[in-house]
Image (cartoon, rainbow, N blue to C red; front, side, top):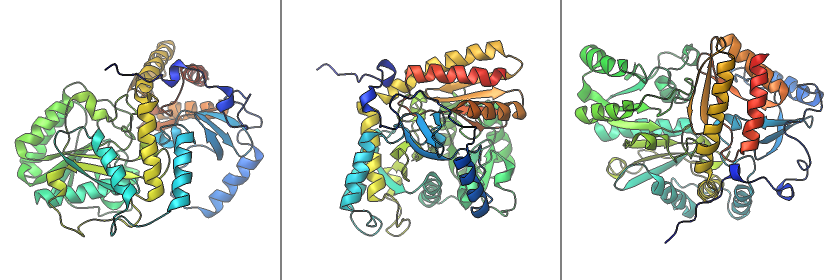
Length: 444
């Protein structure tokens, strides 16, 4: 039987009639006021007066509505969105299939807790996720509200199933801001400052090169913890907040071998790298390595709050009823969005599109690097998870600001990098426009 390969967004123009009325006939970006405009400035002023000072805020964007890769702010300015709400809006803003699924589910049932009852759409979402699992053998799934919650659940499961107290993560890692997740996080010291003592039993190692294994075997396992007391190693197959760092070929396989040698679980945190962003459903699939537990969120439901962790069935069968739960996790509306998202990713060829447009972006960014070798020191990435490393943090911040003021939304990460993580529906034309705007921002 011949398989039909979906036509990707990169291969077809967006029909004008399919756009919402407010977007028809308008170029993207289109700036009608100073940036930020008066209405956006009023939003910023109100926000800063009432919200938590802990919110970091990259630039004064006040998004009001969106479609595809376009965002309109409170003043009617249109921006080309290449951060996708921090790699969340995988199917683009307000994809019609996702919107319809959300509307229909909201009209039928907004909430009933799957923690204590048998919510049909919850197990449907779990089954759909299990079909994507990058591990052989049966798996079980737990749904949460966020990535940090999924990390916390995976941490609890690892300790419970192995009866071991210690876990290891990596320098540069970001796993969330709740207490266990922030202890695993080691991308910036500010995430820990003022919150100590943090969760005990968490250790860190260098990421992504030979020093990883030297440190684990000859430092941590020699001086700090016996390997048979380590429950799990948490790893991002591609580091997100740490700078969109891609480990070299063979590194993940060596990590898997080390875990197998010592009976340690390998937990892949795919909160940012999963849901098709790298051209495969899960970034770890590029390595041929199977994790024991996989964590997902962000792009999983196209903007609705849904996280998950998938585990080998024997692990999740080891803990009893009541050991872990969630009142809201896997809510009916979030599950409806998640199911629609998985369907769109497959049916519209979004993983193929991520590979195709991602390569176009990488090629274009490397040309910009060649023109500005004093400013850009590295371009790296897989699919639509791309990092551009600048010579200094100040240069990265300035390029982010200039890009925003020209209508392109990108976001810093790591010490001095900018990430490009557009919706997976991004077209080749939008990618070329983004490259033009980014080149101008770099040139100054």
